[in-house]
Amino acid sequence: KRAVKLSSLIHLPHTLSGDQTHFRMDQQAVNKQIKQMVEFIKQEANEKAHEILIKAEEEFNIEKLRLVEQEKIKVKSEYESKHKQIEIKRRIAFSNEVNSNRLKILTARDEVVSSVKAVVSNELAKIGEPSNAAYKDLMIKLTVQGLFQMMETAVVMRVRATDVSIANSIIKEACAQYKSGTGKEVTITVDKENLPKKDDAISPCFGGVKLLTSDLQIAVDNTLNGRLDVVLAQKMPDTKIALFGRSATRRHID
Picture (cartoon, rainbow, N blue to C red):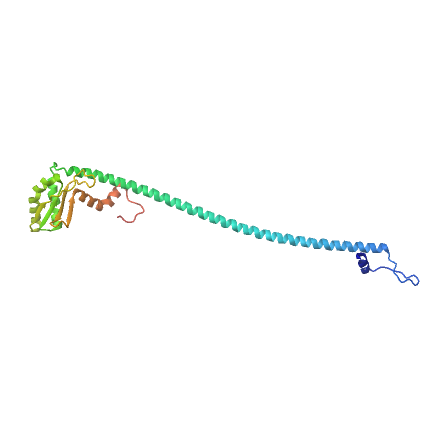
């Protein structure tokens, strides 16, 4: 059937012989034209196949580039995410390390301050010995100072059990100095309740006096321990500067 169709498209030479009504075909010419058409069809097919191949390759390359770019973006996003997580962990670790070192420094400084306070406390304990000749005069000064602060007509004096005799002996002098300074009379009574001993495990007292109103509602702590606490609170910034130096980054002193 294909041969018939192809031959129908080909101009075939023919001769008429007598009253014959059919064409006599030159077989060699037909074969040549068929061969040319086959070659033409093959060439067209090859060209078409080549075009399809090129187009397919272009589409492949485009899709490949798209996938590569997509993967690049994905990898970059994952890298940035991991890098960010690592950076956060690094900052947290650094902050923890800084805070840990700062805490160690603060702890060490507190230990130094506590040791200084312990040294001063030991010296105060020596000053507060009843056998110390200067202790009686110190008791008078502490009592008079307390009287000026309270400005009461009747005061209760509380001391350590070892200081009761000294307390009784200084009342007259303390009242006289108070009257000299204010022009007012004051009555001092030594309390039956005593302050803790200097070696008390909970709240040792190194000496001095504690003055209270007659109803025991208001008190002035003029013990050596109380005075030490006041001095430490007032002089702590200067003490820290003397011990550790002034901070280069701190703008204020508390």
